[in-house]
Amino acid sequence: MNNLSLAQKSYLAGFLDADGSIYVQAKINKTYKYGYQIAPYVVLFQSKKENNFKQICKLIGAGYVRQRKDGIIEYIIGKIDDISEFFEMVEPYVLLKKKQIQLMKKIIEAKRKVKNKKDFKALINLTDKFRELNYSKKRKFRTLTP
Amino acid sequence: MNNLSLAQKSYLAGFLDADGSIYVQAKINKTYKYGYQIAPYVVLFQSKKENNFKQICKLIGAGYVRQRKDGIIEYIIGKIDDISEFFEMVEPYVLLKKKQIQLMKKIIEAKRKVKNKKDFKALINLTDKFRELNYSKKRKFRTLTP
Image (cartoon, rainbow over all chains, first blue to last red; front, side):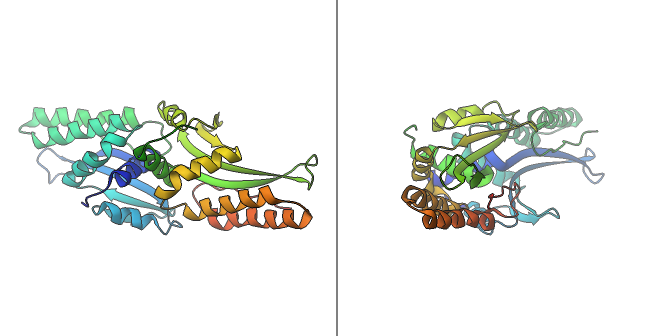
């Protein structure tokens, strides 16, 4: 991830607050030890008409771009280390999504420490809390739970 | 309008780029000299679930909040002097809406200088250009033209 100026970090904090999403998916996946893959995401959105959006993605220097069928471009940060680094940069300037950032940091921490099924259940419960935080926003993401 | 820090200005630039809109309406109004009211707007959007959004509005210290029936809160800056001041603060940090800001500044300038019907027609033509800039964005605003 790139080394950004204060102005760039605050800009990204504003962008994330306005048109970003922070969430975790618990995906059923039998190849994982406890039957689920815990996948955290930070996503920024724009319409595909916005040619300069990719500049912003380059600014961050991590993650990837996905074009949806409805014409929305998603810029997705999905690697835990990238998410942690991104949060470190923008958290001081974020005004609306502070709770989501704190919850995600807690989940990342809990994920690192999973040693047994009990730990994993606690982790799944944490991911569930995103439902309350993100519920009834303009864009809806659901945490998939067992 | 409040005196903001560099971090606050860049934050608002990011917010505006992500979930803001800059447009001009030419409203039919017989009480105006040339039959139209030229109304410029800068709008920031959020869902009404976002309680802290009003903090951001307070940060700016101009404009007003309107709650739409669909649950979206609009923070609207509609006074020309406020728009000019807002642009002065955020323009250096804006990445995606530079063209809209430049066009709006041109329109504000042209509006100030209107002396006759020819000037006014040129002004109306300028407002029309927002259609091209904002066309096919996620949210659609149409400039009303004769």
